[in-house]
Amino acid sequence: MKYRIDSGFLIFWFFYFLISLSFGRVTVAMVSSAELIYTSREIEVDNRKMVTKYAYDLLINDRSADYLSRIRIPYSGIDKLVSLEASLHTADGTLVRKLSRSEITSQHDISDYSLYEDQYVKKFTLRNSVYPYRIKWSYTIESSAFVNICNWIPVMMTEIPTRRATLTFIAPESYKVRIDSAGLLNCTYRKGKDYLIREYECSFTDNYKEEVFQANDTEHLPFVRIMPLLLHFETDGSAGNWKEFGIWIDNLNKGLDVLPQSEKDLIRALKSEGLAGEALIRKLYNYVQDRTRYVNVTLETGGFKPYPATYVSNNAYGDCKALSVYFKALLTEAGIPANYVLVKAGDQQKDINTSFVSNQFNHAIVLVPFEGDSIWLDCTSENPFGYTGTFIQGRHALVTGKEGGFLVRIPALTKDQVCMTRKGTIRLLANMPSLIDLKIETGGRQAEYLRSVNSNLDDAERVRVIEKIISIPSFMPDSITLIPIDRQYQKVSMNYKGTSNSLLKSFGNTLICHMIPVDLPNFESSGERMTSMKIPYPQNLSDSLWLTIPPGYKIEGLTKDKEIVSEFGSYQFSYSVSETGILFKRKFILNAGTVTRGNTLIFIHL
Image 1 (cartoon, helix red, strand yellow):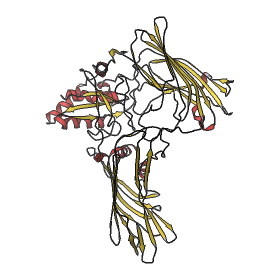
Image 2: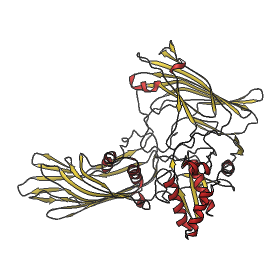
Image 3: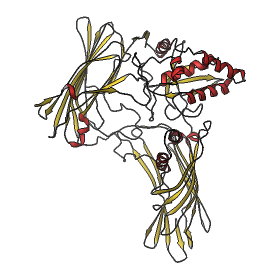
Image 4: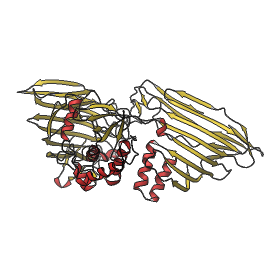
């Protein structure tokens, strides 16, 4: 597009958007800053007790990998860490020094949303000033109660090779387990006296950096997962199939849904006011959101069994499990059936292996089967009623109950739910910053983020965070107003005014204008991608921007409107021109889904 002013100056309107992703199995040559020379794990199960011995030998080649010298050893509160040894060595294995007990510290190891909060960590640092150097450490953990036996992935990071790794699993021949594995160099079974010994060996040398929207954590990685078929954790159960596993979860939660009389009186009062059905469910959900807060709680049984509803009622806080039990108890008291649900939550959608019955979950929510539809409610979130959110949407969940467990897929977010619309005016000025006056209405991840920002940050911090969402190059805000958030409305809106000196660039007698970009991650270049890509939910942007031309300027020519549509999404733009400006409209959609290696995803506009 060309714009000419009366004096003969030209403005070239330039907008460029390019994504090119080609998935081919290409091994990238990388110089490793560190190498895991050797790691081993030996697991022995007998008489409902599990002893696991770990050993590591890590080579650090240069200063950039010194952060790996900070070692963390996680374990559960019901586990017993019976030994810990570590030492520092030169590259050839010569001992430099041994770790002293005074160098070891202990603390809680609590994540933001883990299903297991009874976690601890031992920490120490062994570092040398001469490179390369090696760190060797080993430790033993005894477990008297466990659900999983192991999820063995002997890779510290995808950028760091593992030269040799071994896993040994020793158990009575009669001990029934389920095993899933991939990427092994060797697998042998041999019998001891009344024992079956399984030995696995592997390595990992195709090192690469973790990639944008990586579909699977274990793609290209060697792993072994072992799950017992009979469970002895608080109460006995079976993991023979999802139904039996769900029954065990339900039995674990039995007797936890007792409410104090004050809560029962509250529900009776609400029902006497005529509240019923969805209106009553919504009222109780908002009540839980307003009255309770989410905290991680240390539990005696390793974090798998929730605290009872009375605990949450009395203390007004709980973890995901306790809040879900509490909310389900409120619904039950109101005569509304509901289910306790387990899900593998997270910002990136890494789903479970549905064919491998095991505990692969890290979060608990509530499902209300209601009038032929289902309402999914996360009691730890600030999201609107019935909105699944990017944290749990679109993935498999285990619904539990007295009749057993079954897998269902949580509804995925729609394009409308995640849509961001930007409307307003950009006043282009020659030799001066552009003046920006826009309104954003957004859903999806950014709306969730803004809700959290609005609730938890002060005004100054809130403005700094919102500036990042605006994503205008060199944007300097004059005012940012977050429109009061309606808890029942999934979208969040804000108005902002400011300037940018990056939208117009002068080159002699030419001005080049760059349009506000589509904000997307920095994808790997073509040919370098090693893993499949999974877009967890759609990306949807709609712009309607009035661009005023500096006084005395005219439009000389204009690029034709364009539309590109493919199975991966669409991109379209159009212009409406007057003497004083241009109405620029743009719509970009990137569909949710998986792009496997061998396919190519291309969006291009010049």
